[in-house]
Length: 264
Image 1: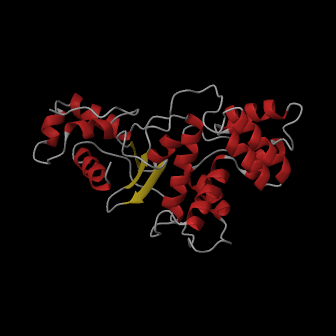
Image 2: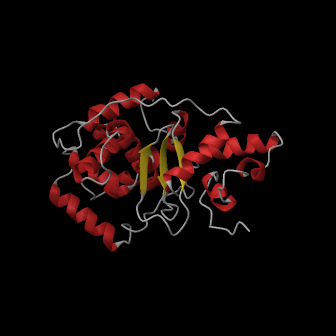
Image 3: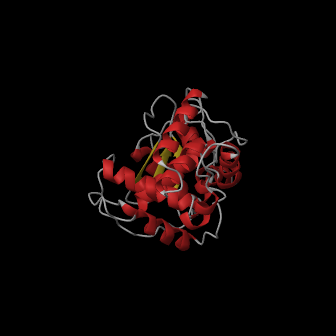
């Protein structure tokens, strides 16, 4: 899903339907400064968005309320988990439709929100910038002051059961919780390594157990399309003259990943 295509779709819909105003904090962090504190930015961002203590209930909806366009790319195109970018009109987050995991998707979206807030002009993919976005996402979804006292120091005894409870409460993966426990100094390096070995042995590095099977659904463009259709403007009318294919338009305005369909 190209940047130009998503931008054009959002622009066409916005001529007919009012979309949320873009309201993102501008808190730049130099992507070449390893000592920067993305955690501070994450705390400021939670305040900016009015997030109350505890888990963020719907990360995609939070992004969309801030005017960020969130879409799934078409299958077979995405080689990375997600990417984001600022355009001349709206910030965009594009998600990989193949990564069908609610918990990891939430971290991906928080990671990209971090990029949009901290790295407005940065080149994507830089190692330091990626680490900064991961640190932002961890604090954004799991504030240290709130989650730290509840993280287990070991996976022995009820350790795994406690991690499973925290996973459901905070909406994050076991891998993210283990890494958080390690980076906050709750869990030692040896314990962390052993836990990750156990994760691999159980096949959880590929697919973790969890209660929630459906992804968080983007709704901004989908709802705009519905409102437009309800007003008597069909998809072909909107796209006529723009030269945009109907099948990709359907993917960009979908609430869940769609297979690439033939537009003929």
